Length: 463
Ligand code: GAP
Image (cartoon, rainbow, N blue to C red):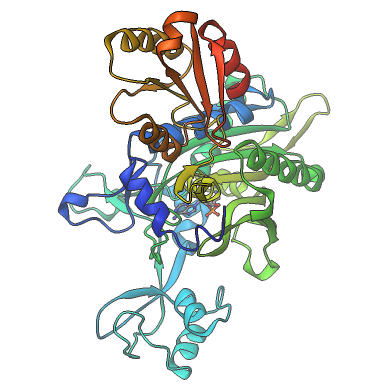
């Protein structure tokens, strides 16, 4: 991220809407808080990132298999996982304007003190004693702080009016992995240590400070539950931390904006014995991008107890039975997109004093890999350009554009993050060469059209 260019999210949010990356959710009805829609280019970017993640962690490894589990799980799942009891935020309401806030965020913003993990009574006292004001209406008349569960509930309609019919939309993809542990062990040839990966939606009824797609109520996670013997947890934890850093590199995140932050013991989630976050310097502050947790045998043991189905490992060689422990690397897909866009966004001052906005996306994940232009809308140029476009389309996701001045077409592709443009002109008709323009340097080279595919396979390096 070029910090002097992106001191707030505003220009990026505007570009995302203007160019079809991300739109506000339900906009024609006035919007629906904390929901967003991925447009044509945003959904390509999202798909490219999740495909690359799957390729990296599932296809290229023999010790990890994938599943695609349901969003609605048996309600007992959340009793066993501890989410019914402990997955909540401490919230406070302004009595005057009725705005609701996360108490720790309200305090942190007003007093710059870390209030995470404090009890309801402590938070209420801090707000009262410091006369914290409502950021919306400036009153200092708040309710007591109370915990609210973050899970979304829905009804199954099996019988009328029965509270047992309440089901929850999963707040993390992890739990459906634990529920399928035994099925995967029985139906595949995995040996410890091994992992189960999943990419999918998760839902949390979050009160958010509106940092675009950073914290939303419906989002996608890319998670791995990696099953190990207890004795190897430290080694496995370090391995995973290093794999996660390599992933950040692979998607083009700049090292200087990344850091690792260890959770203090007293702030660990109920299931965790050690957690570190990979944090990223967003324009609104340094925040969690991904997490890595040692979940011990908490989940498998707890589901075994509540479901009465033993979720254990049989070590046939050594005639041992035990509950595997778990290392969990977790990656937010939407948060990946936000970090990638922040890193890639640049308003570049050019020599002629103009400014161009460019997304310096890694070619691996760029939504459009190539754009093909005839220099002018002349039939003979169009014909050759369309022929070249259709050949390239067999290999790369490309765009064809013949409208407007060539400079404007380049600028549009710069804003989409398209790494290369190919322009066909009158010389192309004579000598079968075309101009290839590179996004970042804006340098142009001339090349025979027959060499384009091998040139781009090398440059874009999708595999
Ligand atoms: N299974 C562990 C788990 O869910 P988490 O730290 O609560 O841990 C994992 O979430 C990742 O999911 C986070 O690191 C973040 O990238 C993403 N995430 C969590 N809540 C989110 C939200 N409300 N909106 C967008 N992404 C979120």
